[in-house]
Structures are given as C-alpha cells and as structure tokens.
Image (tube, rainbow over all chains, first blue to last red; front, side):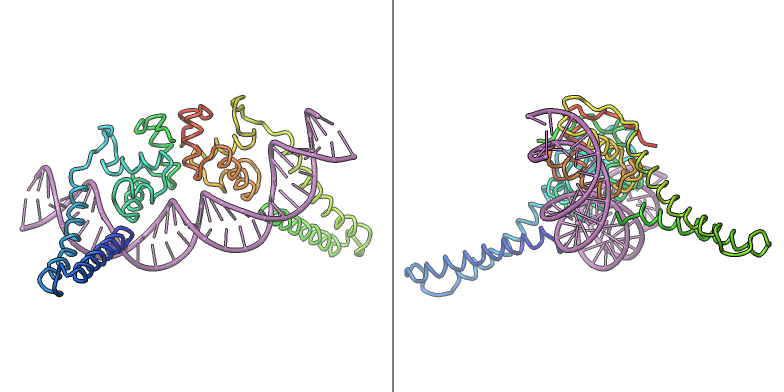
Length: 143
Length: 143
DNA sequence: AACAACCTCGCCCGAAAGGGTGATTTCGAT
DNA sequence: ATCGAAATCACCCTTTCGGGCGAGGTTGTT
C-alpha cells in the first residue's frame, strides 16, 4: 500500500518520533538526562513499536468489523453489499473507503465486481437495479 | 450552438444539397435540363429552406413537449425535475440530453442548479435526497 | 493439497461528472 | 417596460468514476 493511510501512518510516526526526540532533548537540557544514552534509543525504538501498533490496530479493525445484514438471496458478497449501500447513500468512492476503512482502490475494485454482477455500467444504475431487486431499502436517509 | 445537433444539421443539409446537385447534373446529362439555369438555383435555394425547416421542427419539438408531472411542493423546476428523474433511472448526462432533446451542456447546467437547490454535491446524493423528500418514486425500473 | 471465492491493494488510462463564467431567449408578473 | 425566473447553450478546467491489469492474503470446501 502506498496511498493515503500509508503516508498518514508515516507522517504520524515521524511527528511522534520528532516529539519524542524533542522531549528527550528537553530532558537533557533540564539535566534530567545526562546524554543520548539508553533512554534515547529506547524512545527511538518506540517509533517502530508505534508503527507496529498502528498496523495491528488497522488489522484488528478490519478483522472484527460490525457488518450490516444483507439479503440472503443477494448475488453480491457481504463486502460488495456494504460498498453499494454506502454508494447508494450518495457517498463518493473516497468517502466509502474512509467509512469502511479500506483504500480507494479497494472500493473501486468492489464496484467493478458489483457492476459485473448486476450487469450495469454506472453507480446510479447499480443503485437503481439493486433497489429494483429489493437489495436496498427505499430510504437510506442522508443528512 | 456548436455541438452535435448543429453539426448534424450541417451534415444533413450538405448531403441533401449534394444529392440535389447530383440529380440536377444527371438531369442535365439526360437532356432533361439544358443548363444550370433557373432549376439549379431553385434546387440550391431549397437547402436553406430545408435548414429553416429543420430548425423550425426542432423549435416545435421543444415547444409542445409532453411533460411528466412533478410534485407541486417541489423546490425543483419542471425541467430540473425531468432531468433528475432521468438521472435517477441510471442514465448518463449524455443519455439524458438525448432523451430530453437538449444539449449535454444544458443537462449539466440543470444538474448544477439541482445540486444547489437540494444542497448536495453529487448526482447520487441528489437522487437520495429527492427520494427522501418524496420527489421521486421508489422504483423507476431499469431494463 | 488444491481450488474457488472473497477481500485487499496498486497502477495506468480514458470517460464521465462536477464547477464556474457568461450569454441568449422566452415568458409571466410587477 | 422592466424585472426575474426558467431554459437553453458554450467554453474552460478539475475531480471523480470506470475499466483493465496484476497480485497478494485469507477462508472454506472438496
């Protein structure tokens, strides 16, 4: 992955590492720490740990996810249904990606298979057909 | 106007004029006509008349058009409602333009004001909101 | 183990949609 | 007569979508 969430993670880790180093530096000036010794490397090693934690959190969030029910006779898979439901609420692909905690490319891939399964060419057609097939409720309500 | 229908008209008129000239030429060779005289200019002057007829037909078709009913309390104008209804059926802007016999730009302009009136940013949102407001029926049915 | 289905993601490209400006015409109300 | 809303259209530019490719990992079934 080389998209938003990746770079977001990089930036976050970078900022946190910088903060940690600043704090260490301050502690040094305040004579709380004598030099860049054990504590420094300990704090710096915290960055990779944080990164690991973030990735693990992402993985966890992806594993046990509250999944909204889908019709049993649906040609769409669970995930595809979730994507289509978000799309039907008027969200953009990016918004759906953020909502479902996946990348933009993943949403687009899901949409491709949705279009294939429903035999349509556009998202609006997919919505209309899904509604026609009883896969979507009449009103998903927007703000 | 400098789009599809314009150039279509130009092409049609051009082809018809060419045909007329060919017929005249043939008549000449067949000794039915002696030279490029009165008949020639008469036929050639038919082209502008045909053009005028086409434009008039277009104007007529635009004037008395069967308009589908719209909710009385709608914030949308008659035409805007028609556009939105077509969009809700899953049609592209170009398809809507063809359906309503207007240009692609006109459809896009209508959509802009629709988005403004419904306070949305995308066509899917407009559909959802209109459905929520009771402006659109649940099922517009697609092929 | 092998297979299919599903979920995830990246990259590239072309088509469609969105956003803004400006303009003309028509028509009804003031 | 003028004023505004509606409808029509063009041109420009940016963003979003759609389509196709490949490619991993997981899960469940045979």
